[in-house]
Image 1 (cartoon, rainbow, N blue to C red):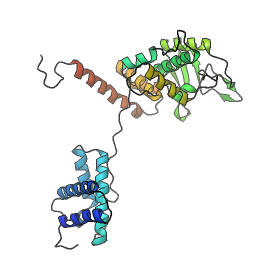
Image 2: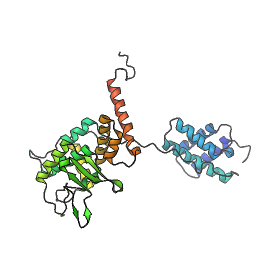
Image 3: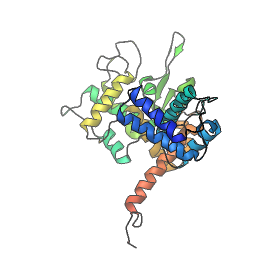
Image 4: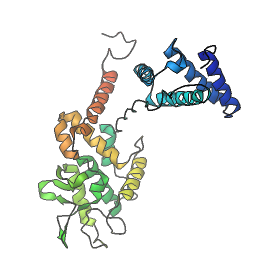
Length: 317
């Protein structure tokens, strides 16, 4: 590299290349300019060719520790990689120090769950089109109550039979055991588990069974569509979304949100993470621990609303 040329000159040449040769917009060029200026600040007096992959990793860690999001760091690394790639074409740069350096993994967002009040309102409020509920509406009530009562996956819900059956050597994937107040379901990895069903869900299922038509597909499916065939996850999703809108639930609701709500609310009331793990059918406690964070988030919100010293600027004793 020409010793007479400093970091600022090479940076300016690269930005000029982006504007005139790559034809990038002024806004994009300005963004790359900020990124390369930040790299110049992070590297201090170290000339461009002396920067190593270890240096880049150290700079990345510093940005992350400073609160920069993983997506923004990934964008900066992309810009730096492009700059050193261009620099290698014009100098004797041995290797691109950004190659192989990855941004930190994006933190997984917490699962979205309904509040207890909204969950109860959703499953307890019938969306009737007439004074007498239709069979489809009674089926909806039973399905939604069971989703919230037992934290089932929508595929597990749709796979339930009225009772255990075995035909042609094939046994039920899941079934209702009414006398025990349980459902038996087959989850991921073909792992079977028993999950208790609450009284409200059992009552709703009993009511649905009084009007459930004979299945046209010859199955013993617990939940049926209006065509009297086994319920599909897609139909459950559409019905739940429509029901949430009709009952005034303030967020978009999908079946997995009911599972998240079940897990969060059971953990809030019991604090028993292992029990929640068993009921959800998680192979690892790690998958269930996310609800601990969700529970803490809920408690923090309650504190902020209820504690007289929680709100900033509050001087109440």
